[in-house]
Amino acid sequence: MTFPGNIAVMGGGSWATALASLLMKNCETIHWYMRRRDRIDEFVRLRHNPAYLTDVRFDIERILFTDDINEACRRADTLLLAMPSPYFKDHVDKITTNISGKSIVTAIKGIVPGENMLVTDYMSQRFGIRRENMLVISGPCHAEEVALDRPSFLTVGCNSEEKGEAFSRLLESGNSRAIVSSDVNGIEYAGVLKNVYAIAAGVVHGSKRGDNLLALLVSNAIREMARFLDVAAPAGGRDICDSVYLGDLLVTAYSRFSRNHNFGSMIGRGYSVKSARMEMEQTAEGYYGTKCMHEINARYGVPMPILEAVYDILYRGVSADSALRTLSASFT
Image 1 (cartoon, rainbow, N blue to C red):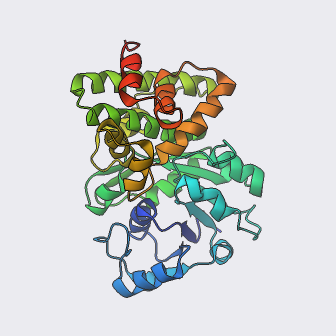
Image 2: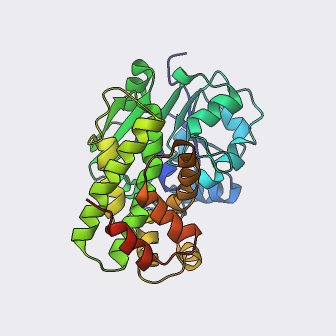
């Protein structure tokens, strides 16, 4: 079997939908696992995802849907994981099929909840997936802009350059480009941290503290990310200004499509954390990522004042005003 073989998209949200739309431009058929049968039935009837990116039309005849995760695992050679990180473990722990010989592509920008592990580490330990058979997808890329057919730029991380190149070609068409990196764990951690920093950026924006402070926040955030990655995921030749790190941070910190920015903005405008979470229509993964990264960094002891400020706001009940005043005084 030539990699990637049959591909199964795992998840029914906006990111899964965007990636599926890219894959279908280069694949004859795809398998698609969604948890809810009623959502699948509506998808087939309407020929688009009824809940996310509803303007993206699909050739339904080329999609093999299932609400049985084990059926998807049996059918496919490559599993593209694209569910929100808070629900990841609930989904994959239902897998009883032997997937140790499968290839795993994770587009999940989060830490495994309750485990404080990267998704690739969890899949390796839980299912025996070999490292050379695991890939990660990151941005800078918003699902909404894929749907609008705007220029999109992705990075595929893989220890095997050959597999990384093969999968990146499936994501390229029209306005979509993809490159390959070997920094798998660095990309995963960066994908979590940029959501945390986007919450902080949203708080600054929502509290009307201005663009000057926001720029100072983001410039300090990329240095904070670099400090952490150098300790937790050391990699020769990493350039923190590459698009997968700085670019993804910028688009998540500034874009109106960023759930994490919007979540932080509500808190900056005076919403309680609980009210902001209830108001959000989609998952702000940075809420969960903040707690995970705070606990992970307890092992490393890297100075991360922005992470700690967001943790104070979300989990310790510190006011956004107080946290930002303390934080901004530390910026350089």
